[in-house]
Length: 302
Image (cartoon, rainbow, N blue to C red):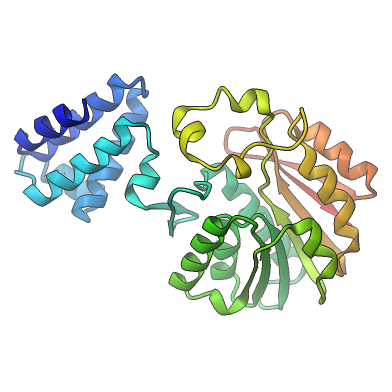
């Protein structure tokens, strides 16, 4: 099937024809038309280094052979359900470009809620001009921490990341965005490493694995077959094992008096996760919604 689509794409000549073929191939896999159109546009912009409006203006013009071949290679990867972000080797988060690939979780737009919440917390307590120290568990690509370091020039951060592949991408992205000198990446289990930390932290955050095992089996093939289960599937039948551990161990980490903790949640987990932190002695609990109105982030104070 991949070879047939590749041959078909090579016969096409215009941006509009290639785009239409890309969309039809994805729709044949069962991908929704709106998502297929979005992916086609992203892929075309990537291979041609063009903006969306430039592609529209050149819709009836022939597509360069090199660009058509690159698009075919991307399509062939999508036909085996490899995520588009892996096929491109990059994605965008908070308007910044991040390198991604197998072994690292792809940043989602919903996670931008936690970045916005941390920015608001910094502005409200210290201000962007004051020094601030952040600790993150499970950095992945570094999307959260690197975005914050870029937006807050006086922020420093320490992150835990047990996956060598994810730590590799975090390091690359930090170097590419010029914030590596303000980032300390620790490649070990946070349960072991957190009690050994020195210094005082103003902020704690994490986007942990929280999907229950039963629900994980129903995930789309792009997620189930390619993205790391370590970053997706939570501990315990309810998937909330991380929160129980985090709530208990964080008080042993040196922190400032008004230190704030923020964690991302799965849909419908707000009440249960709030109860976990409340029982562990945390206060000022707040649930923050994402753009769809789903409770996505829990904020609490020590």
